[in-house]
Length: 87
Image (cartoon, rainbow, N blue to C red):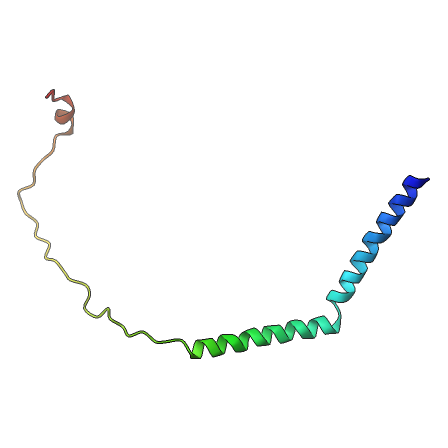
């Protein structure tokens, strides 16, 4: 008998919790407060973006081109000879 009453109380507590949470979440006051906070955040972003300092561009002519000369003298490496070499 006590076990059933305990389960009933738990069930009622869960139902009331879900009901009051939904009631608050879908209320007009909560919607107004959330819209006001979104608008307030957007206003703050606009104010901060106007006060940001602008940094001058100092990357003009930063790339230096190097002439790539292809020399005919390429040393050939023999990998297997280096492994087999006993020094």
